[in-house]
Length: 428
Image (cartoon, rainbow, N blue to C red; front, side, top):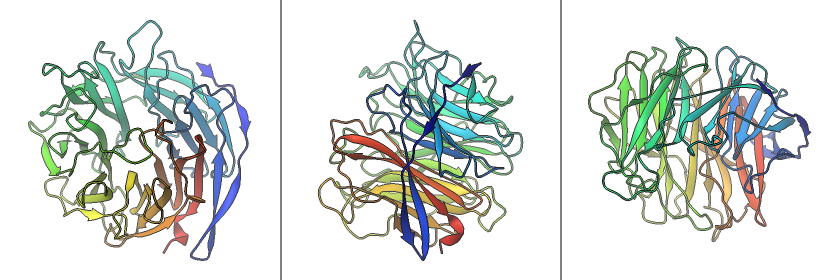
């Protein structure tokens, strides 16, 4: 067991006025022990499903934050793990109230990113115990995400395995992996391959990547990812024991999942997948959200599709951002409030700016994506610098109308981290 050295986190609050309501914007200062040069990128946030005033967040490389007052104030620490911490934070709180921080590995004397690590704690302050998927060096394990079964409480991890990261050899390939925990993260099953069409190892459009699992209220799992054959899925109806013999196509990702964005060293449009577990009208609907260049090169937009028959058929794509400009939207994320089925999206947006100046926009839908509304949540535009690493994603969570978009921004090459305290009931 490891106890984090805690410290009080200062925050700066401002307000955003929309529809007659004030939504506070809160800055999260990085932990004093943070050593990574580009700390506070790639945020992940999770709200306690039974106590929405509790929430946790993580950022690269090993930053951990928590709040017990709905996000008005935060404390922070630097996470340590016996397997090492190498970024890609994924935060989760399960139905029992256990806190999880998933990340890449960097073990002493071992192989870099040779497994996916699960640190868990039964206290929000972070008294962490470490577990991990089975190590498989020299193969690299990267870009994971987690979901939870509402029936069993099983945890499902998905990620990409590279035979040799960065290799251009035809004999080296990438594939989508799956592992589950039936004991609240203490142990993990032997990983299974769930993709039948593999990719290369160059971490680009011909690599299979961005795997996310989503679970419906009957416990059926879908795993969605992208790669050289577009956005694809596999499915299990027995809690991950068996899978379809051949994956299914969902939609073409026009221009691929990796594309240039002015001011960024790299950018992606990897898919984000969730299933509506609410008792609402769209119960069981699977949503997939991504970014691509269907409207032209240099004009990436945020899109989504949905399925009402567990992935057998899919809707036509629909654009999330509601502008008619040729400006960029990128780094999209989506979440479903499982208390009511409302959809929430967050993404970077340049419709109102010139050059690389960037804003942050949150969108929402209360009718299954039929109508979408948006608001700018960033205080003012900012200009990223392509020589400063800005990560690969931002994040949002929503529980019982407690909506918390979280994002980094960059001002004069300095990165800061922000969250907005949104009340979903106040959004029409």
